[in-house]
Length: 108
Image 1 (tube, rainbow, N blue to C red):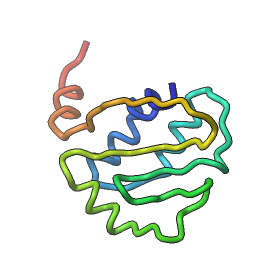
Image 2 (image 1 turned 120 degrees about the vertical axis):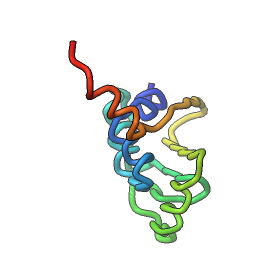
Image 3 (image 1 turned 135 degrees about the vertical axis):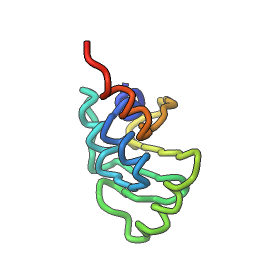
Image 4 (image 1 turned 90 degrees about the horizontal axis):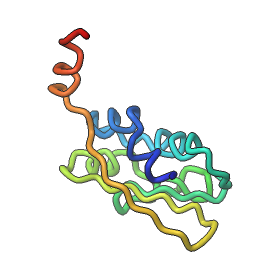
């Protein structure tokens, strides 16, 4: 449920499209999934870059390196709740300017 919530987050899709490595949108989406977990144990990886470690910004986090990663065609985000052995995977896509334009130009 958390993976699905993250992958369908419109704010995260906008961040990916805008090449903005906003790990906060990842964690906010996880929190909005309605599943109990401890954010103080949570790790977030943007590609191979650890952005969040035990609920705090990782000391080695380099936002500019993460931004370069977000410029790639495929963006991998990993969230480790550090609370069990379950695993989930979800795929999604970002929003493009064309998508927003198409869906804002018509009226029902």
